[in-house]
Image (cartoon, rainbow, N blue to C red; front, side):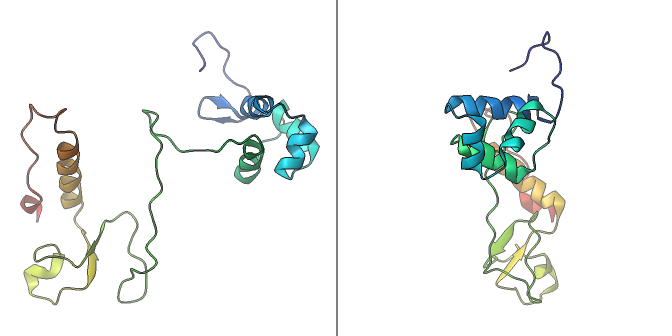
Length: 166
C-alpha cells in the first residue's frame, strides 16, 4: 500500500496501484522473464516490456493474460476488501415479450398475493414479476441488512415493514 510520503504513481493505475508495478510483481512472484511471461500470456515480448515500463496501458484482456501467466486473477472488491460476486443471469426467465427482466430489479418467481404491483387492480398474477417500487426495494434491502446484522443493530428497532411502502 502506498503511504502519504510515496510519490503518486505515474502511468495507468487500478485504484491506487500502478499497472506497471502489478505486472512486474506478478512476473517476479513466479520468476519469469519478460519473454517467458509473454509466451504464457500469448502476447508479444515487447508488450510485457512496454506495460512494465508504463508506456502502454494494456486492455483488460491483455492485463488478465499477463496476470494469469503468473497464476493471478483480477477481482472486484468493495471498500472493505470483500470480493463482489457477479449477478447470475437467468436465461429461463423472460417477460411476456421474451425480454429479460431488468437486472437492477429483484425477480420474484411465483409471486404471492400482494407481491405483484397489479394485485390491487385484480389482474391475473404472472408466473414471475419484480418489485417496481424503489421505496419497496429499499425497505426490503434495509430489512434484510437489519436481519443479517441483527447483533450490530440490536439497539435499533427493525425497519418498517415492506407493506408500509405499497
